[in-house]
Figure (tube, rainbow, N blue to C red):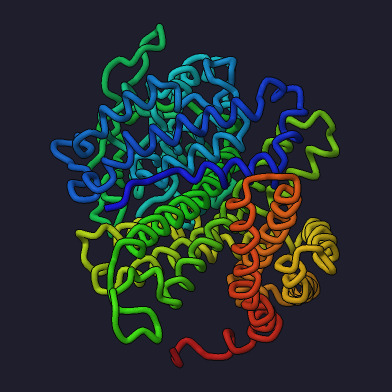
Length: 596
């Protein structure tokens, strides 16, 4: 079994050089953040991930969470690790300083979160959801609600969840039926919620559930949904946890992966009803929940990056140590490790290049989020918010789909041993599989992309990004470094393909949205692949400048070579995907239901 090692050099390169840490620290709210501070935080986080969380990953997978008498017990070691996690201040890293947080920018927290997910995704899901609750409360909570809940959530003494779907609803939140009856200064919540990650456990003193429900006179559909804070333990007058609220876990799901993370069925109001407090305006709950959901979608996209990185490290370690066969053309002599076989090298480079492209895209979205929230210029905030809105469905959809492919390739490198659980390779594929489903399937992300982000906006933000890609393509032409200049033609073809497909979506959406929906997932994948290529090409250009200036030669040369591999082996998918987008809708819609 390999041990996780945080890819600190690449993380720091992306943060400092590619997305531009200087642009983040130039904002007044981030003025105390320095490159040295970021390096120190990432270094310590890497140690915690490797020494505390990674050893629990296999234990958690084998033991799983256990439910007995309404109480969920996490696997051995998880509670102690959570205590260490919160006491070390990791939960408060990006929390607001007004409530005891450290206020570090999202781009730093994103990199740290990648480490937690690589080392132990099931564990990381708990603090990730807590951070989403913090974000929702920060933007929509009342002063009293913030006073009661924010401090404990920021420190991690209390954890948080999001309760959206119900047995009859699935992803269709307009079908939510949980009821909220007003009673004095609070409401009584009654209903059942499913798929609630870390909905019950004993690692934190209290659990703060954000629950979608309907008030008695609420209109039908999504316009009648309100959002409520429902704590596991009702609060005393001084804000401390009191008696048990009328909410409990009635079962946990038996899942393909992330076994250590309890996925709960939560029953609200089997007695008088659970005490809840409305957050935000009545019948506007979905808007507030989407704050949390978008936060979670970016986090889930990062899970894809993290699991792909871990699967790559695991496969690389195996390829370096597994002896099998002789080198091609060698009929005698010592057998070699499988990393010497060309096809294994191709698979490893496929994994490595995709992981680096995914990381660059996820971190780019995080940096834009920091600017959207904190840039002193309103126009820049709006521009970056539009950029974030475009990127979130791509990061969530493409990075998670890629993580499944990367983890599957890692199993392939292991050969037959990859199919054996003891090697650990299968766990990354099992864990990764859910990421393309929860917080909105890839199809839902694609519908969001072609509808809200391209169709309704008529491709305005997309056009700006594509123009930036063309500027990068121009810089590739005639570049002094041969490996970078060689990327030009393939990259131009890919950008042209994305531009043509985007124009087709813009032209077709108003008159035939069904046709656009039929090819929306290939369009999302096209965006991911081309945006990944764009960032890899930019990274290669930066690496060449650093190399010429005396930078780390091994890192810089590796970055350039990896970018060329991506451009030559991954990016050629772009024209084919564009052809599928612009010409494939009719065949998707041609058959009747009976013909399937």
